Length: 176
Image (tube, rainbow, N blue to C red):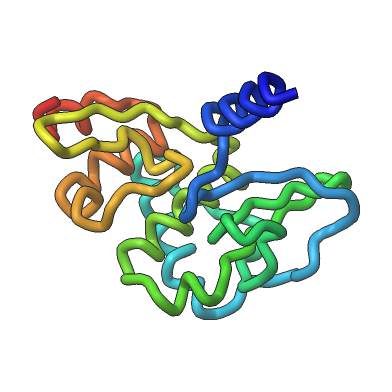
C-alpha cells in the first residue's frame, strides 16, 4: 500500500499541473453568460484588433462576438479563462481580484493570451529557453504568461509569435 501511495504522489508531482497564474481554455455545456464586454476591457480589445490587423494583414480584423468580463474562472488557480460552450459560443472571464492587483502590461498580456485561445484558436505553448539564470518564455500562450519586463523588451517579437507563430524574433531578441 505504501508503494502505491508513494507512486501516486510521485505521479501527481510530475504530471501536468496548473501553477498559480496559469491561464486556461475550457469547454462547457450551455451558452455564454454575457452579450457584451465590460467597458474596462475595451482598450485592450482595441489594441488586440489593431495588432492582429497589422500582423495578419487583415484590415478589418475584429474580435467579434467574444465578450470579456469579470467572472468565475471555475478554478481558484486560474486568473483568466476562455470558455467555449457546447453551442459554439465563446467568452472570456478574468478574475477580478487578479485584475485589481496587477500592472497594465500583465493585463494586456492576459487579454491577448485569452483572445489567442478564443479568437485565434491557439493552444498553450510551454517552450522556454534559459540564458544565464533567466528563463524566457517563447510565447504569450505560455500557461504562465511572460513577465511584464520581458514583454516590454520584446513586445513586437511576442506579437509576431502570437499572430504568425514565428519565434525567431524572440530568440534573436533575447539572444538565446
